[in-house]
Length: 367
Ligand SMILES: NC(=O)c1ccc[n+]([C@@H]2O[C@H](COP(=O)([O-])OP(=O)(O)OC[C@H]3O[C@@H](n4cnc5c(N)ncnc54)[C@H](O)[C@@H]3O)[C@@H](O)[C@H]2O)c1
Image 1 (cartoon, rainbow, N blue to C red):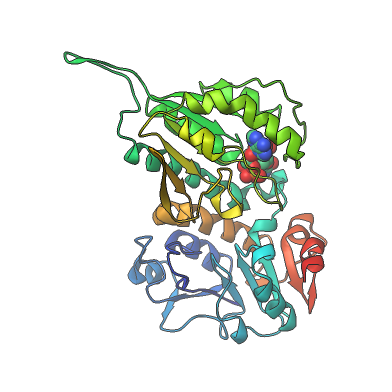
Image 2 (image 1 turned 90 degrees about the vertical axis):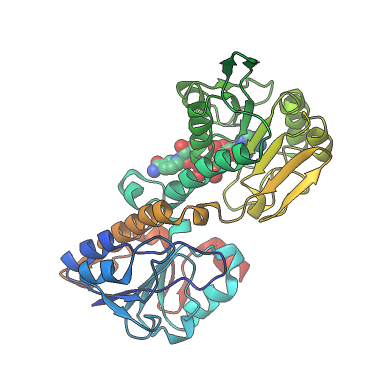
């Protein structure tokens, strides 16, 4: 069978779903691979490198020729997909309902890495984690670049510069990477998460975990908190926000709008020149007023609303994402044939549409 990797067409999407290294893997698994010319340009993967890895470089989008289309964003060429074709992408079902309907109506078997179960067997395909890692790292660099101060401490003949104080809200994959990056740059870091298990992980990275007089959660994912609890949380972290030069917020509840943790008044209490990066801006925002893709001034504080952060580092984000995609595809490939077995819990969990049906119940309810 033939797998195809398109050049991503959405504005500002600079990643690609296959790199020469993963093309080699797919070819070794018995697949023919088409790569649209220029697909890897932003990730610095040339057409020549794809050819050397065994791909055929095509002028057109692979949909309609390849039986399997691998992309980052849902393919914009859904009208060329045929019944029984397979796609793997990072389609976010709740915000892409038109695509879901089109995939269902065309009888496409569509997998979304956004739905991948977080079980051990699926770890090598866990694109939520690989891309969150990139986002957490970039968030700190974004803040450091905009901060009119150093992150590390310096002792110089001209005097001593104290280290910057960084507060990370939400210590999942992105938050932990933000903590690690800020620590490497020499900042003093504090962090908070509603999940009890996060405390140990935060401390193991050399940061202080904020112990708040609030109920903690024990699940793998955070569950929604009441507005009263969130109000109390905002009250309890207000003085820590006011003491920070940088706040990186990453708090999220799967399938829900992000909780508001920082209000405009809290921003205004921060030192002049402080920077806040809201990684949750696209899912509603942890910070009042944050707009995805925009930097706004609130008093003398810069509020950066993150938008597709992984795409700002396309080479490594693509390399990790492409490996995740290839690993998921290999789970359904035998002797060059892609035949998903939907009794497999990993494939079952992330299969969005199949044979004219939407298999993901929460998405079905939204339609
Ligand atoms: N393969 C695996 O088993 C696997 C892989 C990756 C992550 N995980 C686990 O999945 C979980 C979620 O990770 P994620 O990075 O996808 O999280 P996420 O992006 O869903 O949320 C980010 C963080 O925000 C936190 N949060 C939510 N509300 C908050 C609030 N009001 N205040 C402070 N923090 C708040 C969450 O607890 C979470 O740690 C973690 O427990 C992680 O260890 C498991």
